[in-house]
Length: 124
Image (cartoon, rainbow, N blue to C red; front, side, top):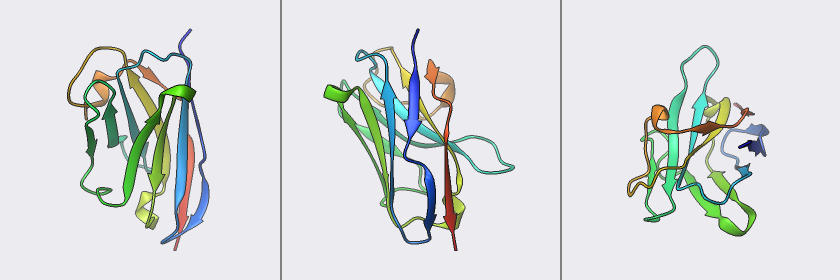
């Protein structure tokens, strides 16, 4: 059984920071990504990282503010979120892909496993 567990969500004021964690039950995931679903909206891409290349990709809305990283010793991927805005409020999901890829996918259809999500609320 493959499991992804997100943590680190919570309530933060605009301009503040928060770090999300995603613990994976497997060490062999090649790419991992973060997606989010704001209230009343569809799930959207946030950030992704490829283990094989070390490359990262970010949505334009978070580029320069969010950073994705990975700690293989802990089978964990992180999303450091700085300069948070109220529009960042959403349920954040961790996703993992087992296939070998050079560029981390932006499309959620490319990911094989998903976490349950963690709520991030940014107050103004």
